[in-house]
Length: 205
Image 1: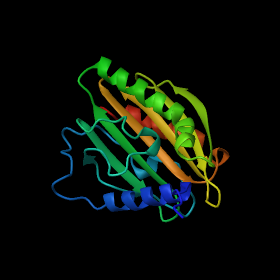
Image 2: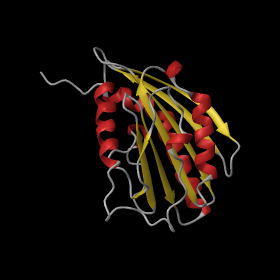
Image 3: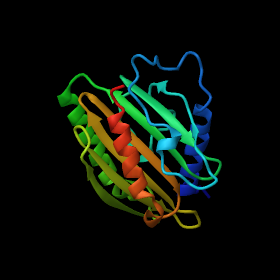
Image 4: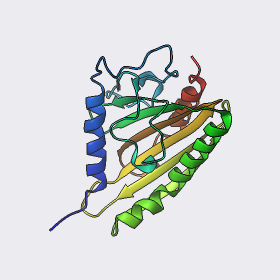
């Protein structure tokens, strides 16, 4: 009998892809002069005894885009960086240089809609599962940022929780995502808001 992949399988696949992305290649490394500024592992929510491994800033979208934002991020003008720990936590940042302030604002609006609708969209394609979301509010940084949380789970599988920070500085948009096994109450929201604020502040090196 065919079984849909559970939340743990989704997160496990993301962890494998993120770990692979930590090994850079000469052909994909983004020129430092043109890439936006990025956060580092030290800027992410910390877990005692479980440090972050920080990947290189790489041109283009990651192999696995955060599942809530599939199809919403353009490859043109994009860079990304992946982060992993030795346990079940991963994170990433994707930044996109757009053609204008108006284009950046439209992209932010599209990303926020995808994040807010993620739980409902996931349930439509995963009957029998459970999902919930929470709007963690806006942040007063540059042209603004917004933080969302999503929780998904299927029977006989570990639940997963995801945080998304979406913001922009002028024509550059960034998305920071964080995920691990657990529920919305397990997410380090306060620390992640600080991460999101730093990510937006660093977009213009």
